[in-house]
Amino acid sequence: MHIVECVDINKTYHQGKVEVRALKGVSLAFEKGSFVALAGPSGSGKTTLLNIIGGLDLADSGRVVVDGNAFDKMNRSQRADLRLNKVGFVFQSYNLIPVLSALENVEFVMLLQGLPPAERRKRAKDILDEVGLEDMYDRRPAELSGGQQQRVAVARAIVSNPSIVLADEPTANLDSSTGKGLLEIMKQMNEKKNVTFIFSTHDNMVMDYADRVIYLRDGMVADDRVKR
Amino acid sequence: MYLQMAWRNIWRNPRRTTIILLAIIIGVWNMIFLGALTRGMEAGMIKNGISTLTGNIQIHHKDYRTDPVVENSMADPGAMEAAIERILPRGARWAGRVRVNAIASNARNSSGVTLVGIDPEREAQVSFIGQAVEQGRYLMPKDMYGIVVGKTLLDKFGTKIGHKLVLMSQDMDREISSRAFRIVGVYRAEMAATEKEFVFVTLPAAQQMLKIDKGISEISIILPDQQDNRRTASALKDEFFDDTYEINTWRELLPILNAYLKLSDGFMLIWYLVVFIAMGFGIVNTTLMAVFERMREFGLLKALGMKPWWIIREVLLESVLLLLMGMAIGNILSFLSISALSGSGIDLSSLAAGAEYVGISRILYPAIYVRDVVIANLVVFVLGLVVSTYPAAKAGRFTPVEALAHT
Image: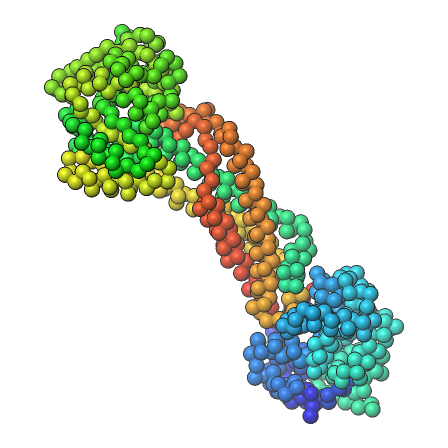
């Protein structure tokens, strides 16, 4: 069974009087536990597709099913619930909550899920240890480097055991060695927890790590290569 | 953690938070402190009104208030006095008086006055005059020719203690009756108008001069604090059912003061709203700025799965913390200001001529009432939350994609 299915997705943006067709009939399916890169030039529709898969945006037409749940049949609150429980996000610019410490940032999603404090704290510490931030629990985002912030973001995305993690250009703001370290961590999580990772990226290194690379061009799938 | 997050968020921009806090503090202080001054002024006016020969309740002949002449005296108050003793609650005091219009004159001046015939001992417990004599002495019970006058009248007549003053008034036979009294004491009152108007002689002297035997014009009753005037008045009315007498509370006897007090409550509420509107704009403006600054963060929270209502709740929680802090400091400041003034009060002597015209005391003491403090705090808290819902709802309405794209 596919963990994510996209069927004939279309999306058009209106920028003033100009219509921009971001996605044109995209159909894709993702296996559980896969590590997939969405590649392509700027404006090819990578981020739009990622936003639609994650329920942050809605397709104009077509169907998206995540772990058996169809977004197009849900209201705003149900989509929020699905994101909370099934989807983890890693953004290009880290997007941590600046007033919370690394530990609290990771705990926050579990707080929204209503988990008891002791369990939240234990799981947050365990996952931060796994991404190599065992000494950084109490540091605020401003006190962490870019790579460390992105590791906190990965820990936050993975801690609630989501079905998929969507990462929008996660290495774009990192130097190559930090980016590589981050990819190693994500790959480990992917293998260890069997979580599906879908990236949008320009970065060849990310594509090297991916076991499937989907090329988008002008809102359509130009190529879809499964490497192993 | 929500509370922690809200607390840390409000201190992300200390300067802005300080400005909002100052607006709330000044608003709350202003409402409570000025409210206390207004209440103090009202309390002074009521105290003056009651102690200046009004009392909490008065009993008259039914026609006296429309035509205050000696014919409308209560001819035989004995039975009534016995009933009053029986009905009044413990701690209540009362005194019977003769009160008629008269002309006071000496060799050089004459002036219209109110002649008040009093039982010196009883009256001292009921009205201001017992403690108001500053020069000379107070009246003795059997003083048939002694008179106590106000300082202002004394100065106006250019006379002094020991000199004579002639009083003229219409007696029971509808003849002009006059008697020469010797000034034995000079009193001071809160208002110069009182000093100019009232002259005091003993009750027997007034009764003899006006030929009304045991008759009196009124009985004035002072009730203990917190005693319900209306209930006691109603009990007295039940006792004197035959309509020979009229029984009124001070609110009926001083209609202008009563109307002013009612208006004053309305003015205070309007004042609260004016202060709040100024403060409310500050709260909305700064909260809205804070929300727009954190637009990207709200997008992130939504992306993580936070529902719009939770985001609204988070922004409102920040407002609640700000309002509670501002209210706490505002309350403390107002209590300190009020307690600093409670000993000495504010001397309004320079305004006395204008102030006394409406019965305001020369020295204004702030008076704080729990009800006013609660209302001021409720106005700030409830309306503060109401105006905060606009920026909070804005934060809740951002879609994750547009908010995350915001730089």
